[in-house]
Each structure stands twice: as C-alpha cells, then as structure tokens.
Amino acid sequence: MRFFTLILLFTSFQFSIASELVTDKETTLEGIAIDFHQKFNRDERDYLEDLKKWNPKWVKGKIPLGQDINIRYPFSPYLGYGSISDIKSAQKSENFRLNIGFAASYGSFTQNGNTLKINFKQNSPATIQIMANDQIEKNIFIDGSMYLSKIMDAKVSGANNGETKIPYDFGANIYVGRFLFDKQWAFYGGYDFERFYLFDMNKLETQNEVEIHPSNLHYGTVGIKYFSKNYFAKLSSSLEIISNSNIASNISGKKWIISAGKNITKEFGTGIFIKNHSLYYDGKKVEATRFGLSLFSTL
Image (cartoon, rainbow, N blue to C red; front, side, top):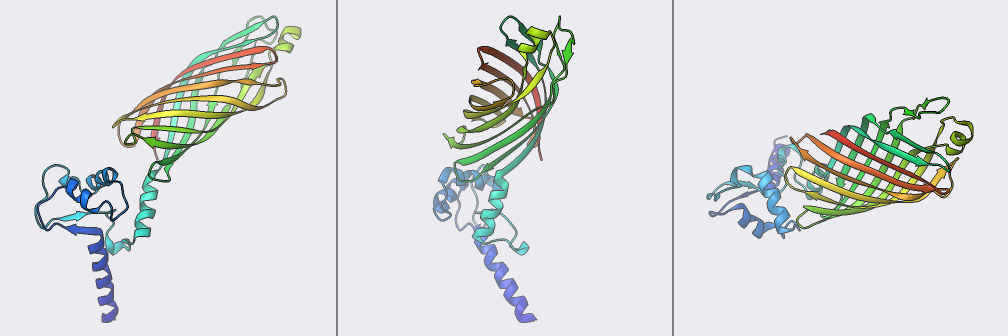
C-alpha cells in the first residue's frame, strides 16, 4: 500500500511540475510568453493573454525570483488533470458559449397586390432566442441560433373579417467564421432558415377577406462582426435561394440585419437590432422592417 502511495505522490509531483513554473530569475509574463509559447505550439500574443488570465496577480509589474507561475491551464494535479489531452479538452469546453435572449420589437409590413396594398404594424412583444458559439480552432468558430417570435394580429381596414392571427415566427441559422486582427474582427458565412408569412392578395382583392399562409425561406448569408472589451456590432446580408409556399412561386429577394450591444457583466448584456426584408414573387413586392431591443444571458 505504501508503495502505491509513493507512486501516486510521485505522479502528482510530476504533474505539478508540468503545470507550473518556478521562476529562477526576475521576469514578467511577457518574458514567460516569449520563452514558452513555442513549447505549447501557441501564438505568442494569444499565449500572453492566457498567462494573464491564469496569473492575474502578475499582470502588472515584475515577477520576483522563486514564484510559482501557471504556464498552462491551471487545474490542480491532485484532481487528475495535467496531461496535454486533458488540458486541450478543458480549453475546448471554455471556448463553447450558450446564451439565451429575450427581445421585443416594432416595425412595419407592406405587401402589394394587383390593385390593393396591405400596410400593418408588425409588432412583436416577445421573442425568445437561443444562441451558441464554439471556437473550434485558433481562429475558426461556429455560430448557431434559433428563435421563436410572437407577432401581433394583423388588422386590415375595410376587409370583411378585419384582422387575422399570425402564427409564431420561427427561424434558425448556422455559420462558420474566421477571426481577424487580434480577434477584434471576424467574418462569417452560412445558412439561414425562416418561416415567413404572406397575405393571400388574390383572396383579398376578389373576396375582400384577409388570409395568410406560411412560406419557408432558405438563405445564403455572409456577415462581419466587431468586438471590443465590452461592446460588439454585427452586420449580415442574406440572399434568398430556395423557397416553399402554397400561394407564391419564385420568391426572391434579400434580408439584412444590423445589431449592436454591450456586455454589462460577464453573464449578462443588452443590445439593439434592425431587421429588413425585401422580397418579390409573382410580380408582387413585400417590404418589412423591424426595430428591436434585446436582453441576453450566458448559461
């Protein structure tokens, strides 16, 4: 039993040495980054940022002789961590983020027919969104999200039935992107899906009744993002490539979204956004613009 205890202590000691550096001279975190970034196959600048997170006591000033410095992900060796594979696994879990958001928005919706035009306020008192982000490589990331939105009833003056309920709006997307310029900027591209509702203009013009039908829209999307310490901004443009609808054929057009926000704390933030659709089908045009305010939290 004593033999196995000695082996365990020796192994823990080996892990401890591997995960820490005892300074043999006066130095700085910048100097340690220069000396060790190649050992861990890291970019010097990125490695320095990690050293600052792992050793906040020594972010400013010089490090005296004989100080213990964490030179890689600082798990205690007595918890069973310490191998390169375990550290990489832990770092991957740190790169994954899951957020949940709540938004409210107001806006306008216009759809042209052959002889009539519909205008109504496209207001949404509640939208729930789930957003995920994972940095899969040093400068490569994957973004994905989905949302469910309640749209207020559409009221059309002069129609026999006056108004109609609009079912929940739904959408999802997935993007792959790359960081640029010290990770302050990033560009991305991918796929968007939306369930979009159109009025049956033929029925309104011939029977004076309001009726809506869902259309499934599929987009190709490109965009750019900017990050600072507590602020972020995002611009995306989407081109409609495939559609499915029982009242419209050959739907074409685009949408764009501009958003910006602030991280109030590490787990909580707020933002604003503008979303615009310009769609065309069967000689008719649809224009919709929404302005919104959002709150989000990291899970």
